[in-house]
Length: 234
Image: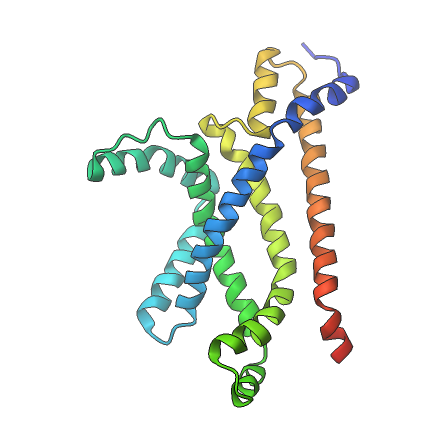
């Protein structure tokens, strides 16, 4: 039997979904911090002169890119507690489900961040670093003052795209019982015995759409501000 469509329910359900936006943003923040740290290590390994770190980093990136997000989430959620119990004798099944989500997304995000950081670093002309060193700057000073600012500007567009993708991947958290925006939407539909499904999903899509627009415009403004000095020297 076809159910009628109630546009007013979209407005009605908005506050109930927005109440869980902080959970979605928390998962993103935790993933960005951990995934970026791992991505930095991967980038360093890819640019190493030693073949073994290069091989390991390249293999990790390829494996993560070929693994569906939901498959890795289930592997982490079901296998990690067994592994920790076998090695340390600690039961982590009662741990906050967001921990498993952050671990999963961080592993995936790290692969993208490693390539992003490596590409951004290589986009800066090597001659600028050498000129800074010849002018008396140390390696650390040359990196912080010359290479890093330019690499950040080069990385911002792709980093924004990575964040947007990360937010959408985070919607899979509901599959292990995590109550974020998507999980709350699923609960609302189930409590209404399948009714208001279309209205709820439209409301969710609108929220994700608005958040994405805010993120893109914010990054565009930051990129424009950081690029002022570069444009003035052009």
